Length: 160
Image (cartoon, rainbow, N blue to C red; front, side, top):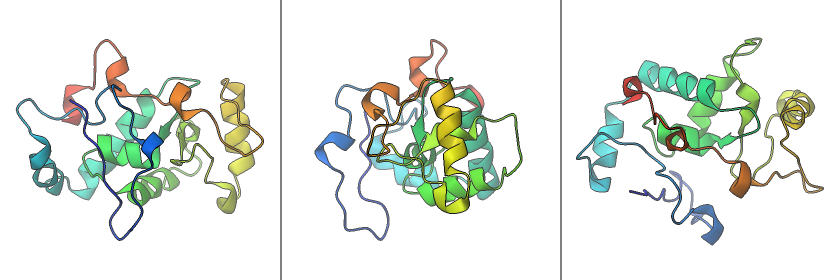
């Protein structure tokens, strides 16, 4: 089942045609029997600590050379539309060296951390893993974006 994320809260932007991957792996591995109409109810039960733990567990699973977006991370952690909150979780990891924080980028395929002072570092770390950025500063999300169900085992049960 492929769930499509609508515009973010408070945004009048509609997703661009290329932003939804038709035939792509599930955007959200929901519990068995959960319907798309139940998504808002399901995500309402995700408290901040649970969301934080899910985000960290997902980031730990991103393989080298692959990326996820902040919005995708929020959706997979059970809070669609909470891209900024996912970013805040990652920002709280300042100095943490074991989680691959550099593998989380924005929905345009760009690094968003230049204004925080470590965008060049993030780009270098990703380039060392084989993630290349074009002249526009974008990477190829269609090719490099990672989805948890690409792994044979799927998402860990403790996430959902």
